[in-house]
Image (cartoon, rainbow, N blue to C red; front, side, top):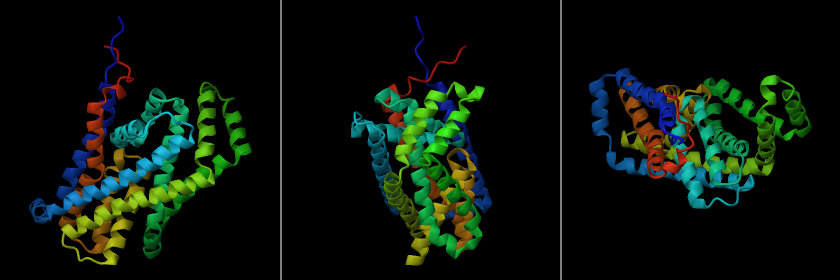
Length: 327
């Protein structure tokens, strides 16, 4: 009798991210005086934390709308909004896998739940990530012009993303590259999936779809910036439009830094960027910057991971595809 599949390998994929998250937590506490950082936590107006979570949910709602839009555009019309939402939320913990590679599992889930091939599902995940990147880069624009020191990271990220989009839309060139790749021994065996991935990506990255994704991505990530503003208010930073603008810029740019770092969930890179810019741009001391960074990450990344793990616990069917390891 065949053995039932196990889910241990999936949890192992997110374990490095969980460990790194704990290490980053300790590191932020040690940046300043632990007692002063603890006092800052105690003095934070925790009644505002529910509002931070509400803005994070706002982010997820618009990202889900974008996700479901891409599914329909890719030809998946059988998955109901409820199942689509389950898959979207279940993918949130995969953000803490090294290089976010675990998010490729969403392509497998889509294949199991509907009629898309795994490659077509991966193109949806890719389009979703690209639109998120464009959204946070858009929100970073004004801040980058105001603070030129951040321009190189912004420019490299933007050029890379635009190059991917443009290449996908120059169909003769893309098909020629695919044909050339098929002659390589290591690529030949993936020729079929690569073709499916490209054909789906070609549709999802067309101008109208990209613009729609950009608008939805910008709106969604604005919610996370608003959450950062609420955290700052909880730390008694004066209320002003400048504070709100800097909160949006700091959060968005730190997301970019975390993304290009390829670390699980951007852990370490995003926190250092957040704490550093809170100090440089808003004048917070090390203790307040560390506390603010931890609070916003608890209210965004780790809140999302917790939601996803809850979906995992309620949907064991999503985990059964993980093959059992021998021994």
